[in-house]
Amino acid sequence: MDETKPLKVVESSHVSPPPGSVPTTSLPLTFFDLPWFPLPNVQRLFFYEFPYPTLHFMETILPLLKQSLSLTLQQFFPFAANVVCPPSPGKPYIRYEDGGSSVAFTVVESPSDFRCAIADYPRDVKSLRPFAPELRTALSEAKDGTQVVLLPALAFQVTVFPNAGVCIGSSYCHVIGDGKAFMHFMKSWVDVYAAVGLEKSSLPLFNKDVIKDPIRVESFLLKMYHDWLSSLRENSGLTDVGSEVNMVRATFVLSRADVERLKQLVASQCKNEANSNQFHHVSTFVVTCALTWASLIKSRACVVNNLSYVDDADELYYFLFPFDCRNRLEFPVPSTYFGNCLKPGIVEMKKKELTGENGIVLAAKAIGSKVKEMGQSGISGAENWLPSIVERSKTGRLISLAGSPKLRVYDTNFGWGKPRKVEVMHVESGQTISMAECRDEEGGIEVGVALNKNQMDEFVAIFGQSLKLL
Ligand SMILES: CC(C)(COP(=O)(O)OP(=O)(O)OC[C@H]1O[C@@H](n2cnc3c(N)ncnc32)[C@H](O)[C@@H]1OP(=O)(O)O)[C@@H](O)C(=O)NCCC(=O)NCCSC(=O)CC(=O)O
Image (cartoon, rainbow, N blue to C red):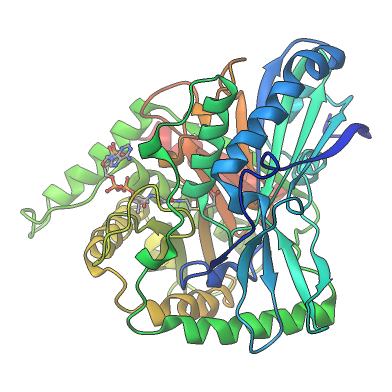
């Protein structure tokens, strides 16, 4: 059932803004953009029901899809550009060239089962890979003869499952922008496709000067960038998202009622505390992260402790989540700001707390406090953001979060219905979980998880049991 059958390439092309519509332009990168160089590209798959033959898609949908993409790229030109990576001591930057920059756009046909592709149940992590486009790093020669690495910003692959569905697979370079910037672009594409047009007030803002760097974090991050570039040249390739054998991925859906019950559980425990008058941040996001993180560590403990007895109850586990800083800093950054504007929130808890009876409540309190604290701290301590992630990820006990219910990925409706399923590929590393709003119920939430088969069995049982006991 998980077997993926070979694809047939139907069309291979490139889409760029209309010729002459965007002048050749360079944009600098900020200290929010630089940390993303070593990280994998973001691959997001949007699956739609489309019960028509491939020819129907090619004749009635594809021309307008490409034309509207071209017009949208005119407003979001960095997504048609490259990140230029010069050797030390050069600084990387974004470069768009009129007549030279474009987005790879491929159409393929798949004989695979669409229902299997959009399923929630655990499936081999490899089963979705054929639907995600690759972004290929290139080498180019600068005017002075030095070789520079070029990272393309974005690529699309549309997969048609004849008489069943289509998948718009995207791959973008995180250095260009974060999830908010990417979803701003996707929703604008939908509006242009539907001939709604783009409001001037909702156009992206490319002014990188809005990001202030009073403590010069950039200089430290540039050093890290040059180290990364050297290793890239030595290994002649980008870091791959490695994944173990026997890894499966699955989606877990929490209904609005599940979320409400979780919130009540946490709120009632907080009320019983001595400092009950203290405000606790008990949002949908917080309780969902708490349930998932606690279930993950419990399931890992079940699998590991079956194999050997290890006294690691005091060992620290880490949960990393991104915090969108737009409109939340010492200086104004508008919500339409294009680029990266995320800071990391890291929560740490002892294994015995997370896996204990009260693990979900303790995790919710820890994550909620961190969200609250981050809302007040602006960019202070920015020089420690990256080192603290690197240090903790070395332990193998760091789980990070991709996506957010606020990105509203299911609003990406081109006119043939909202997506049946949206998936984030790099969940498959097993170190990252994904989160999105629930497709079918306002207030519900979806979580994407990948684990080895044994741990997934435990996780399914623990996660389900926790919800039942609420
Ligand atoms: C730090 C946070 C995760 C914390 O989220 P919380 O929901 O706990 O807290 P909050 O202050 O934002 O919201 C609290 C309450 O206010 C309401 N609320 C506030 N703003 C809202 C909005 N824009 N839309 C809907 N609801 C909103 C909610 O009802 C919520 O309660 P309730 O929910 O209970 O009703 C978030 O603020 C945030 O920054 N999210 C964005 C993260 C992001 O951009 N991730 C993508 C990373 S890029 C990436 O990973 C790559 C990619 O994805 O492409």
